Image 1 (cartoon, protein in one colour):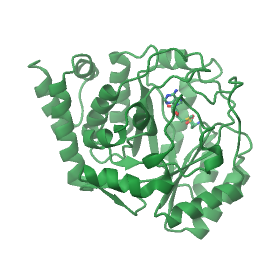
Image 2 (tube, helix red, strand yellow):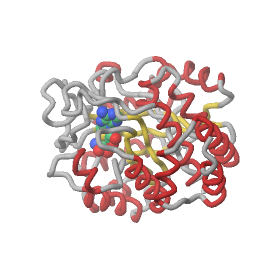
Image 3 (cartoon, helix red, strand yellow):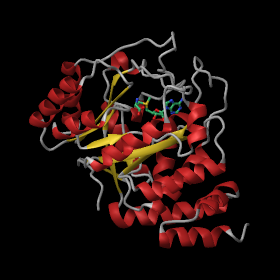
Length: 349
Ligand code: SAM
């Protein structure tokens, strides 16, 4: 047992911050005992705000067409084996209709950076969603756009925006992305979204090539200072047709450890137990909740396209990952003492 870890964890719990060196130490010297202690504190912090409820979001993967070429991503532009699709507005509305009937009150529209989704198309779609289901929140996750575009989408009714920062280290960012993409623009987007009044989500993968404890410390420091409403983290999982296709995957253990730390940095944060976590372990979702997560995002995309949004190999899309199998998810969550609620699931401030 390392005698320095527990005092660090206690201080993080009380003060919601550590220095960069301390974050790095907490990660590099982690032990199973430290993980258990962190999870215990994280669950207590989460329960004080959200009780034993878990928020759900209906995830609609609108398009796997993408102009970017991120080295880790299965829907990257230069993957010739990706079977491309995009959903027109009518299909997205049909997903929302089905999701509403199933009890979803947040719809997440996520996709590659596909020029088909112009501001005009999206604003019209947002207005139609908000007119038909005024009690629902809409989260967009459509990548980097101009400030003007984010402003127009916000005016048309978008409530939240998920844009993982991917890594808070500019050099590491450069090793995960082609030179046409820039760390500075990613950060500009996140700042713009926040200033425009979105509930903003940042996030990162756990275990992509080249990631060190020092990089993760910077990610945690970024969460501490940026103060996002949401943070999406999940293990990196290789996709065979990408340059990182033979790299090892990130681990369940480190992902859960980081979920607990993020909960303690920002006790009210909306923290999903991601599909990637559910993919690397059959009980990944549950273990994520038990580490401090409080959101799950089952898939509401049409069955015909679900297997095509392959960011990584063996991506889970059946059973509790599927919005249509909400009963299975309710069952799984109740087996660990948690309740799924029909609620927009906004951050509690
Ligand atoms: N294009 C939008 C964007 O850039 O934010 C949204 C879609 S993008 C595919 C969503 C997230 O998937 C990325 O932010 C990335 O962290 C994650 N992702 C992509 N490839 C992955 C992989 N091989 N393993 C785990 N997560 C991955």
